[in-house]
Image: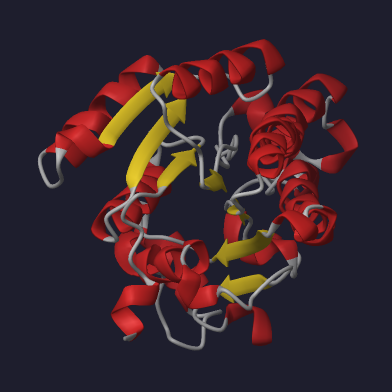
Length: 277
């Protein structure tokens, strides 16, 4: 039966950046499919809130949280050891951690988002979390999956900006000169495109150990943005709206389960059609 292919009972999934908006949704999706989830985040407060939210809807025994900095191999290895001590195995890895810089219209923050002024310090910080972090976590947990030859799934959360350029008109503010206008910084596009490249590499690297790798590229999600931004972005989307935060759950379930057993090395773009216009 089709439903059996989506069943993740006896499977465990580790989600990085699990305390964020979509991290909680990814965890919910996998819990709905009967998986156990290991939620990691650098923020203890976000982890605590995520745990509380999830436990109100799902079996608390299937929810584990660990504080983890994806840029620190020692912390990642430490979490891997704690999971092993619990006699658990990571069958599914969801690389979701990122720094998503918000466009703010005050002072130097605007100017510094522009390519001409973007600092190497900010570049290094964002690349470290969004791209190097995904590499490190994949390296460590992917190697463990490969070692025992029981297979697994690696899912990288990219963005529709992995295949299209940011439309900087969305962020334009009245009364500012062109050189002072805020923009979506270059790091976001580089990170999300890089995650697709990482996906392709991983899809063939451990294929003999039955480890599949795919990417999911969401579009814009409603999250309290101002009305003008929502209207402008929605006008660029054939479906005429942004996504609700729970609309990616079924895709997560598909990509992390045997329902997608013949899918490997693909970037699934779910953006309401924005990238086809």
